[in-house]
Length: 446
Image 1: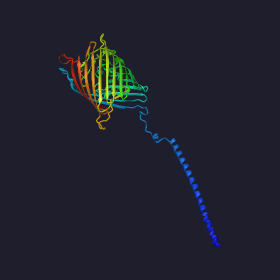
Image 2: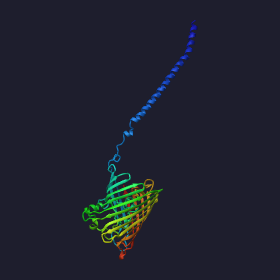
Image 3: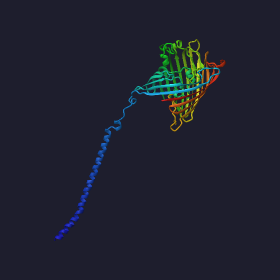
Image 4: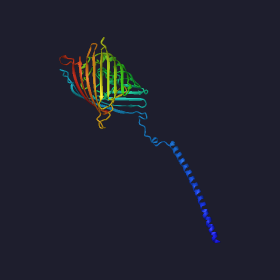
């Protein structure tokens, strides 16, 4: 009996084990499903919290941004700059002339330093002085205002708008000196008010001017009569400079009028003349006698073409001088034609209606030898007219320019100048002769 009861209990237990195991398995599966659902819910909540945190909390870079510079905040800025040009040259002597200023000479052509920048908002400024002659000379001193994206206004001593060559900085010239007519016609900076309007390929410039700052501030009896100087004038220039494919075209014209005022009667007489190709010699083979010029009217044409390493340019300029002598109004003429080529592939800089800095492709020390450029020029000046005999010049010139890096230049120039009716006679009174000139320049700017 006991055995039967034991056997029956064992069989019942054996049959109950699978059912209990199945119940536990079902419970475990339910718990796992609940855990999975809870984990998914928590992951969603974490993602939502992260998204909300990114919207509410500033990014670290924005929260810890560096303080703005004065320029970024619209405050005043100061940018120093300068240039140094050291020249050496040899000017040939006409037969029989013993001028001690001819032959070999050297000079510091320019030693300039200046500052420019903004005054906050649309106002800007520039102040530049030259110390080349151990005397402080003010070159630029002006205040500017950017009236709009296209219109800029300038007040103070600055360049008039005479010609492409004159408006190009001496840092970027293709020869040591500008074309002969620019100095012969007395182009210089003057105190005045002007505007420049730029839109697309068009640059329009115009201004009203008095005289150079030195002539305005000198004492009575000096070159400009000081506070007695009432000279005044107007200048205008128009440039059309479209890009044609890979080329750059430049066409321009300018018009200038000046009334000398009391300077014509009481100041020193005006002499139109020019040095022989370089600045080291103060001798002028071409020069008029002193003229009492009441008014000047001059006008010029400009043209240039730039494509790859090749450029070509030229200008023509006329000046009529109305003197106080009855009926004497001579018209003088000057011009040049030039072609240049970069053997190293650079493109001559051009910007805003003037020549600009050339960017060296492979500077010295940076995997190359710098830029090498050859320029050829014909330069003409005629100072004869209406009974005035100042002479005429036909000049052939060549320049070789090495630019090892953007801010350093070395120039070697040669010119042969043929004179007729020269102001300075050679032996036996001969006023037709030729002179050879060679010059070199080392230049650095920053």
